[in-house]
Amino acid sequence: MHGADPRLVLGLHRSRHHRDILTAALDLGVTALDTAAAYLGFRSHSVLAETAADLLPKFTLSTKVGFFPGAGGAEHSLDPVRLRLAIERAARELGREPDTVLLHNPERSLLGMPPAMGHALLGSACTALVDAARDGLCRTWGVSSWDTRPLGMPRVDGLPSPDVLMVRAGFLVDIGLLDATAVLRNAWQAGETWGMSPFGGGDGQVWEDFDPRPFLQAPHDGLSRVQAAFRTAFHLPSAAAVAVGTDNPGHLAQLVQALGAEVDTTAVSQYLRALHRRRQS
Ligand SMILES: NC(=O)c1ccc[n+]([C@@H]2O[C@H](COP(=O)([O-])OP(=O)(O)OC[C@H]3O[C@@H](n4cnc5c(N)ncnc54)[C@H](OP(=O)(O)O)[C@@H]3O)[C@@H](O)[C@H]2O)c1
Image (cartoon, rainbow, N blue to C red):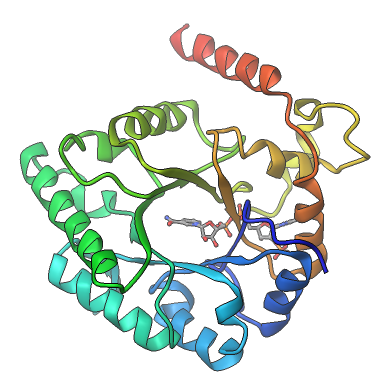
């Protein structure tokens, strides 16, 4: 049994939602879970409640709203009324209020919209989440964005500042996206940044060609390339926590072990400078 470490958030996007990974997480001190109304074909909340009702109170739980079941699959909406109903439904399905509710990929509804209209729509969506937190439907609220670039267009000046901004993290994130995230983060002054998807959801093939271990401070106790990639993701961009997915308790144990390593932030800065130079040339 490990002490709880809030830096690792177990993300359920690709998860089978089996109970064994949740019990393994608790044993390893992983006490933060991230899901979404849309995960597992819109059944994530109810399946969690069915299979792990007794475990859920032991986790801090974040979920996301913004996608809704539609005729041709999932449809996206920032309609504040729909968002409010989705937050209420989440608490009902889970059998408890989530700790944090995140607006799920708001850029999906903003793409191609005139900036003033986008600003108003994003503002009313944020206000729906602020109101939900005020009414006790969650403790904190935030925004989870796969692509922060379209969020720069409507600008976020004057909009409520999220408690959490969840963004893509790690070596697989394009420098243009990292820059857009930095601009957004500055403008929005979110309370905390959480990284997500440090392996890009992929099969790990890329780490056979690229060794990120030089980004760790020595000695790094024989950590693997995957562990180094995960640990360094906390600095690309700098994040208080990183949401990562696995159904494999052994993999989760490796990720927990990687938290003990320190990252060479000078090497990370040099790497970012090199990417910027390459982009400008
Ligand atoms: N827009 C959004 O809001 C959004 C979008 C994407 C992701 N997210 C959040 O971020 C979380 C993670 O994203 P993700 O699942 O897409 O991507 P990810 O965490 O980058 O990758 C998950 C993949 O990495 C593998 N993996 C994990 N640990 C490993 C290890 N130690 N060794 C080898 N392979 C390992 C997993 O395979 P195994 O199961 O075999 O370990 C799984 O296939 C999501 O669950 C969600 O919470 C949010």
